[in-house]
Image 1 (cartoon, helix red, strand yellow):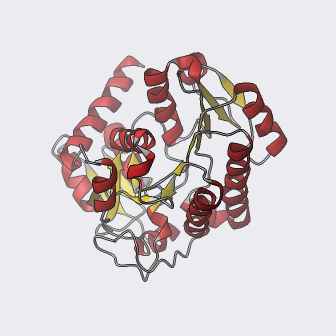
Image 2 (spheres, rainbow, N blue to C red):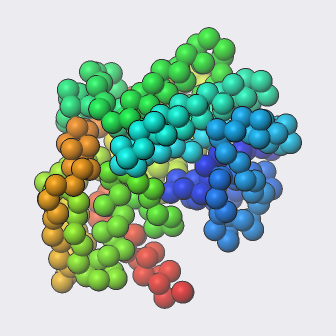
Length: 319
Ligand code: AKB
């Protein structure tokens, strides 16, 4: 029996790539993309698309009734930087969107649910290097504590109602197919576009701000690998740490310079995102993901930089 997969929040940075990959694996008509905005041409034409707002439960319920999904991915969320500008809205979307999906998943007996968490669940008193799965967690952004509360609810729904929900704490994600949506790690995507277009980039994070990052190909592979893992192998039902590659704006600029020797980076002062970045881990211990579902990273800094620049050049030529 093929899976019927509903992806809520399908038009964002992760959704755009995840929907394409799920459709490649499961067939276009078995993956229903849904968002509050119209998707790009490829997503719209490769399978079903529905307009839906995760906060409008009746509307969302109609989609569950229509498609009877066996798997649901909930990606709709407000990220760290935008969340600080709209704190109440971030809390509302990130929490009530999750409740709507968890409750409908139980009502419609969905087999598996995926919900992303983030390294933003850690805070200034968490260990900064090789941050473990379990430690002090005192996030100080609305995004961070909405994700931490969400993790607790996911584990609660698993323990109390037997809902098979799976989750990853993503590091900053870097991809060329879709723009990032208002996070603190977005510089690591913008830098590639501006390096190619202008040869210069002004980073809103300081030269030595190390953060855990991951190439989108690895993030999509990790997500599907976790969803495919046998349930009995999973020991974490809140959210798995995922490490990726840790680097600073300065190191990334040096790597880009290997391909664009004249590339110049400068740094802006007093950006509010700096304080958010300073409260997050610099590197992550993901040994539990390695142990439970065989996680292994593929793209290092050099591989990711090469692939990003090549793909962005290719789309520029084809446009
Ligand atoms: C953000 O910067 O807010 C996100 C994240 C790390 O979850 N990319």
